[in-house]
Structure formats: structure tokens, C-alpha cells
Length: 263
Image (cartoon, rainbow, N blue to C red; front, side):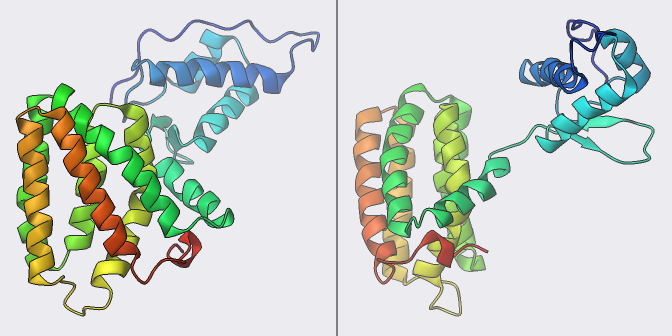
């Protein structure tokens, strides 16, 4: 993979008098490298420059540089294979980096599945509006493909997974990065809840045909409104969908907590 050129701006060299502590210097190096990832100078799969090059560029000691790389590794921005000669590889994280900690926080706070469904009902309808009004043709086409894939998922017994992914991806396609990250954080909880609430009692992992038909019709209606760029109607439709889905999915799970469905 490629290595960046040129490097980011240099930081002040380490003070020989000890006025600047090594940990502080390592944080400055980490901040510079982190900024290169954020700005796109370092992309997913790129390797950091060789250690000797970084030491010379930043004018720091080897221990300081290695501490900076460990900071980035702890943030899961780089992957370091011990003993490898290729160095640290950039790994741009997705929402999964915060999904598990978020799930743990929800569990520790005593959050219920009703709390999660309320949050999703608040987030998803405005995302549908944004997707309809501002989404690209490619985003609209992807939503349609996801809707068209639902019948295949139903036959394969993977409807819960396909449905949860469609909800998540619809928000991500809206173009609002913050909403997309929140949807990604809640994805695993939503998928497990869907499986537990709708599919868990059926060994074939299939919902009743009438319920399935309503679901597919609602998904298709969303795709139609999005493609027609009818934002207000898409928002209204999806809010009604989410309210109905919330009532159905929480039936029998009114007091179920997040901690009850996550590992």
C-alpha cells in the first residue's frame, strides 16, 4: 500500500532540559498523524512512513514515536503487527468502534428496548426526508436494491438481519454523518431486538405472510417516495412505519432491558 508524502508539519523537538515531557511530545506526534487520517492524507490501508523517517521528521526519540503509535493503536486508528517490517497500517474505523461501548453504557444505565426504539423513531424519519431531498441518485438506487433484497432474505430466513441493515443503511445514505454514526451504534441492538421480537418464536425464522407483506409494501413505499424526492411524505410515512414497528416489536418486551439481549 502507499505511504504518505509529504508528512504533516513538524512539531517542536523534544527539549533536552526536560521542559517538554516525553508523553506530551508523543501526544503531539499522535495528534499530527491523527490529523492526517482525518484530512485524508493517510487512507485506510496505507502504512505510516518508516520509523526512521518519522523520527527524523518529528525530531523525537524512538520511545516517544512508539508511544505516539501506541496512542493511535489504542484508538484503533492503526494496526501494528509485532515483528513485521511493514510498520503500522492505517485502519479507518466505522461505527462498530463505538457500538460495543455504547451498548455497554446503555446496559449499565438500565436502558430498555423501548428507549432504543424511541430513539430510532426520532432519528429515522428525518433521515428519510434528508435522503429523499438531498440524496444522490446512487443513494436512492442502493435503497431500492436493499428493498428488493428483502424477499430473498425472507426466503433464506435472514429477514431480521436484512431489515436491521436496511434501517441502518437508510440513515447512513441520508448524508448526515452524525445520524449515520448513531444508527451504526444502535445497529446490533436493533438486529438482536428484531430477531427476538419477531423471529425468535418461529423455528423457521419467518414472520407471518400477512405481516411480511405489510413490511415489504411499507419498504417499497419508502423507496418510491425517496426516488420521487418527496421529503415530507417520506418522513411522514417512515414515522408511521416506525411507530407501528415499535408497537409490534415491544409487545411482550415492554420491560426488556438492553442488557438482556447483548452479550
